[in-house]
Length: 267
Image 1: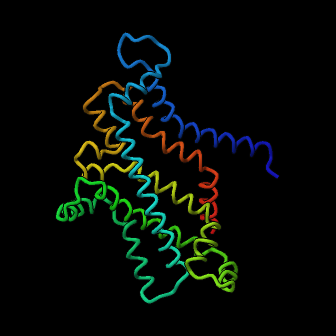
Image 2 (image 1 turned 120 degrees about the horizontal axis):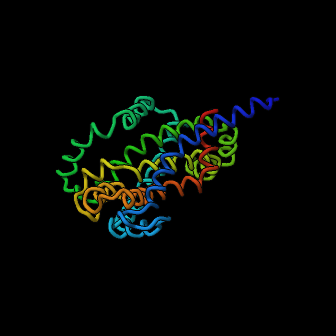
Image 3 (image 1 turned 90 degrees about the horizontal axis):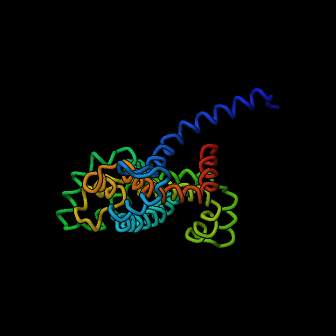
């Protein structure tokens, strides 16, 4: 039994860390709702969000980010699940070496590869295209996703897999009809993490695309800061708009996300 003093201490520590984590967020929201120009009346200025959306052209930028996120998350999830299943349940020559080669996508930062990658894509005429933004992020995300799904498939119930095999199910049916539904929390956690990284990616869109129509939301926010406004209120409003999709996705999937993280830690 936990004593009352221990319970109070636990809540006090949780409240302290929650306050530390939420303070910057509350400050940004407070700044976004403050007057943008000297002489404006007090109160909450919700119109800052509409003005920032219009001046910063965030509609176009967020649409591009949404397209990139859907493509990266979808392709990465498909390739990661299949690669994780192969590395987690099959034994073939060179599997361990090949797996560690795949892990180089996690260990090598994008900053070390982006210049060489730019020249490689330019030589085949793919720079300043959607492919140049999506493909490098898919490669990075598949490296993490393969590692994540391999751990799940290795810890999955062997009895269930063997029962599916006895029923005549092949690898494809065992994967998509048995293991994938069972691994929904792990897959959801992977999807949320990849979406968050993709939405916040700044370097690859900056280097690979020069066209304004291919700017993502974080890149558009940087240009908004430098070109359209010097006021902190509109800048904070733009930052809030850019961060909002990640927050909404996490809040919508938080149960599966936390469950997947806990199960991964226990396993």
